[in-house]
Image 1 (cartoon, rainbow, N blue to C red):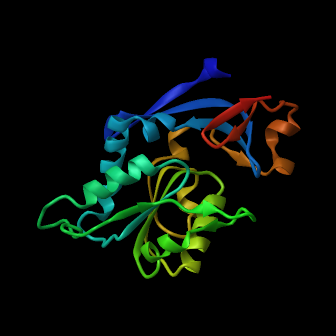
Image 2 (cartoon, one colour):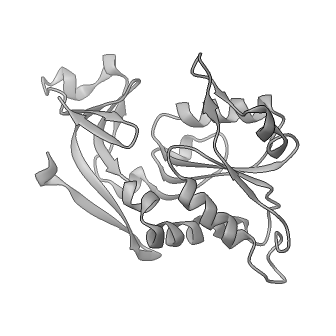
Length: 213
């Protein structure tokens, strides 16, 4: 499986590279043909800064931002993104402001929530939702429901990878899409073409990595 891995550099900045492993993977909801290893982009400080610069570009001169809500381990990128949005400049609309970087937690029912002392950073605030990967939309849908519950005002959605940008209801600013990965597909388990062809699962995708079966 790992022997077939390949890398996809970002055309605008070849230092930003997505590692891709082909195979037969499952999450709790879908089967996928590829595993996307984005951990280095989220945890390597110098790379995370480069990612943040690219993701901040669509908002610099047009979008007021009060809070960046980080999902799926994107906090380092979120902090650098806030720094980029706050840079001085006549065309930078957030110069001189404050931008908070926060992450929701899960309650006992596995619902996304913000603790009482953090809700003021969401209520009536202009929010960028930052996620790692959008392959099914479930994470984004859950996060948007949470922001709506706390009266947050969505200013934008950013992602490192978006599987199906043409199907998104909201505009999503992403570095990579499925068009960068030849043959990339997702399936509902009961409709999985790999299963129908008799191909066994290679691994289970978990937060931060995968476990071989």
